[in-house]
Length: 216
Length: 242
Image (tube, rainbow over the protein chains, first blue to last red):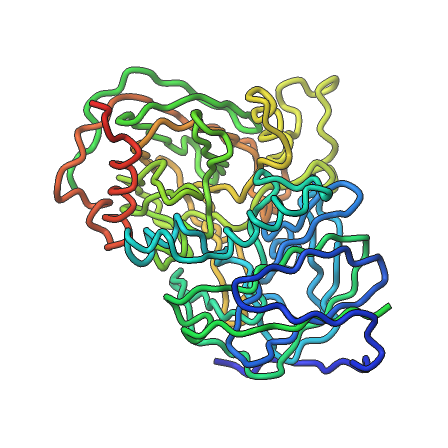
């Protein structure tokens, strides 16, 4: 694989206004204000952070993988990528990235898709979509329902597309301490499932915590 | 290849820049033919019994380890079930990640959609086409998902670069066999990466009929272990149905 462009952040973690550790199998569900920057840190490496964004003023506007990759003309997300909505507005911009590549084609794991991908009897294993379902059930104030749950970003996940049209899930290219940082271009609701998947290499078969930092 | 079509009972020509929706029952087929070449057919699927269950492009791609869609692939819902199988494909590579064009993008490329002046030759866009059909079932923007774009080959370069190939699809056919009752949304608006000099107005032929029974060695069923499990999920969903 070609070498990936990375960029470090100039922000000081000591000046962050909020600092949250999210265990694997848990969710993060917060508003990030326009102009604020937030960072997701892959604390132990090879973790996947399944992330959705919503316009905080109108959650029917949400992150759209199709609009994002079409407008940038590339399938992978990295530094300088503009994360676009289903109305084709820029919601956030990636401003620093020490990992170099993130996926937005592979979607999230769900107990139902686990039955297809792995085994019919794995339907009761924890999955990202269940974390999202619990998040929206426990936080009705956002007005987000299952209808609003669509195709996400998998930060730190490596899903290369081949020139002959194949799609593979490769071992992560992330490592302990790698991070990605975004600045919000509108008030956004961030919904992250820290992936609990035990059946594929996206987490190195060992789901671990992530950290989320927010700067003013 | 085994013929999966038992009979054709209805046919219609869908002009370019158009949209339609209909319910297809389990065990029926839809054959789509690109009449003049370079057509684009947007497709989305919903479960009429539970409209929250919809076509899921990421699940479809990852469970079959593919970026392109073609013959023997199954089209999955977000609930681990198969809406339809692609039992025949003469084109070979269909896109399901680029979504639809928006009204302002079409206007910038080819001029504003204007029914007053242009009547049926107006410049419809894929997003509005789907929104119109969705609204007929009480659905809206929130229910949109990444769709299929039939007859549009979008390849990815080594660094992730997307490109729409100019491969002629004139006369090429795609057959979908429905594996459960499915609400189908269709449009014939341009692919969002299309930058031809004139608005592409490309008709397709749609034929509907019954499918032959799915055999034990069906090519879509046997394509991969994941599809065998997907069909098992469909069987569970239909438990008790004759």
